[in-house]
Amino acid sequence: MPSTRLSRFNLALMSIWAAVPILGGCIQLRVPDDRPRIKAVENSGPLKVIAGGTRITYRSLAAAQITNPMGGVVVEVDPTLARAVVEADASFPPGLPGAARDAYRKALSITAVGELTDSRVELMVNLAIAEGVQPVYPVLLVVRTPSCDQAIVRNVRGDVEMVGVSGAINIHSGVIGDEPGGNVRIRTDSPVRGPVKIATTGGEITLYLPPSSEGDFTMSTLDGRVSVIAGSARLTHAQHKPGEWTGVMNGGKNEFLIETMKGNISLRVDQENWATQAPFQW
Image 1 (cartoon, rainbow, N blue to C red):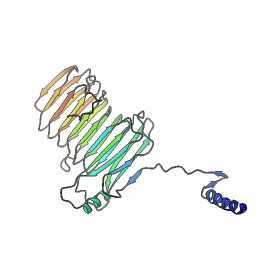
Image 2: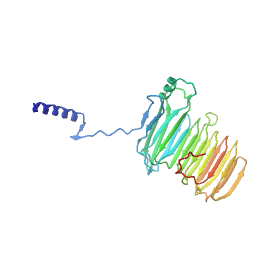
Image 3: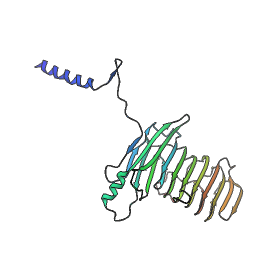
């Protein structure tokens, strides 16, 4: 009886070792697949993926390149996250059958991957829809990342909101004569380090910066007004014309080029209490 149990044990052990590849006499352990994740919705509800590739931490000072050809973009910096997380969901009209909603969600996919460059990790995020499916319903893409020191966003038919991005910012919302842009809202608790270039074909632009921010500002709108509340920040060379404001804040270290074809532009300088749990009022 003991010999029978031993034989069964040996057979099980042989099965386990047979599943492990052996190359050149060395055991090769399987490495978890960390390639870009592309995921379609399996059931009703928003898409959600964890970024693959090189992991981004709160110390990474990562850059982000985000493309959404179907709607708005939200970028939130949350140092407590272990990895970047991306979510997306469509906005459907009331009364649309559940089967139609599920079919549209299943046609959507997110690619999110961290790529290591010579100087930093870059988070590449793209939203796509299956070939042959018309993007008739707008989709909001939400990117939450442990760090983001630079952000580039391209989108149409939706707003762009960034909270906590403290490096260079480049946003193009909409395509002139083709796809509409949206509102753009930027809020940071630390001075922006790098140029800020924002252009939308139609929408309000709001910048909420701390008092120690430095910038050389050129803000203009073809159809709207520009307002500036500088608080305790020091302004020099300020010029205010209809639809345009230029000025230098605290020495003007960084360039701010802000443009909208239709909408108001607001610059607010204040020290918001980021520890508060109350919703932030733009």
